[in-house]
Every structure is written in C-alpha cells, then in structure tokens.
Length: 265
Image (cartoon, rainbow, N blue to C red):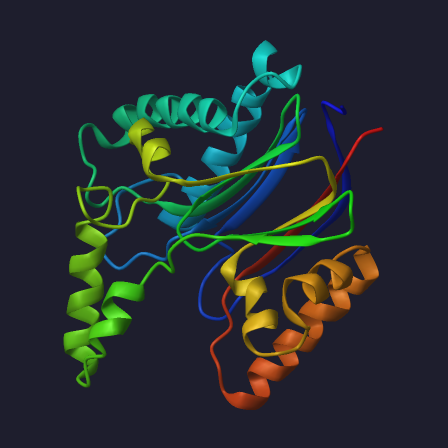
C-alpha cells in the first residue's frame, strides 16, 4: 500500500471582491484543501491581507509540519491525528496574536485525504469536497454540512436580517449543536465528517467555490468533476468555464481551489 501522495494537479483562481482566502497542499501521506471563511465579524490585527487569508496560509504550513510526524509519514497515522496536532499548533500561534479570543478568530472549511495502511481516510469540516476514484473505477463523493445552511433554511427576506443571522451563526460556530469548522480548537476533529475507503487511484479535493461547477451542471456530478480535474489543462478549462458561466448569470464568484493527488506507486 503506498504511503505517500504524488502531486497531479493544483489550480487556484481568485474570486470576486477580496483576496484569495483558499490554500492547499500535501506532505507525505496527507493532502488538504482549506477554504477560509470570509470575515463577517470585526477582524483582528493579524499579519495578512485578510484574517481568513492569514489563517488559511498558517494552517497550511502547520498541517505540513504535522504531516511530517513519523506516524503520519509512514502511513500508520490518521487524518484526525494530523489535523488535531495542527490545530494545537494553531492555538499556540493564536495565543501569541489574539490571546484568548475565539469568536472573532478566523476559521475555515477543510477537507483532508490521509493514506493509511488499508486505504484512504477523508475528513471534512463544513463544505469542502472530495471526489475519490477507487481501484474498481467507482467514484465516491465526500462532504459535510454547507457553511450557511442553517441561515439559508430560515430564508429571511430582509437583507439586513439575513446578514445579522449570518453574523450570529458565525459567532456560534464550534459550540455544542452548531457547525464545527477548523479554527483553533483541536476538539473540532471530533465533530468532523470522516469516511474510510479502500485503496484510491486518484483523489480530487476542492473548495466549495470550485464545486460550483457541479452545482451549476457544468460537469456530470462527482465523476465528471474528477475526470475534468485529472489534468492541469482540463482543470484550468473547467474553472475558466465556471467563471464565464458565473459572469453570464450574474453570480458572485468565490475563490476556487482544486488539488488532485494520486498514490505514489
């Protein structure tokens, strides 16, 4: 069983209205996509172009450090242990920059793929996505809860009321009964969606901004998304088509990130 990922495709495009707040990477047996949550609450004084951008890049670096641990590097670790270690490191950095502040500390949706001795683990917080091609050719889609689904279900007609509900929902994240995301709490791992699958041929990880290509029908479901994202040129074409379609329908474009990895034979 392979114990390392090999890079295949990495393509990112910036959305409308703010700097890119996504990040992605892979080290050894771990691969991930991070989708920073655009600020709705007053930002802290963090050293980056925006709080979510700083957070996505900080977590990216710390995940890479955690993925180099012996247990992860030899394929005997778990997605949860790698993420938990990285979030403990985030909490130490957060203490230096923001003391005990949690409510306004930036956060992110996240998807991780971790090679194990028997296959691959997919761990998801919020609305990042994974499309996994298994050895038998089948494709499995893995995701969790859309970030703003609870507010969307209330469907407030007044824009100010909607914004107030979104802010309140953001304040309540990572508390009992609410949406859990990557922030600075290691216990978020216990609330993540986790799936264990067999040996993968290929894994595509994507932010929800990139997965809009599926939502808008530009590809035929997770299988079509995986096929389009199997080459750098195909991935670039897909995201260009997505941007052109969003512009045509007047939809504000979110940052879009696609990372495709294959087991290193």
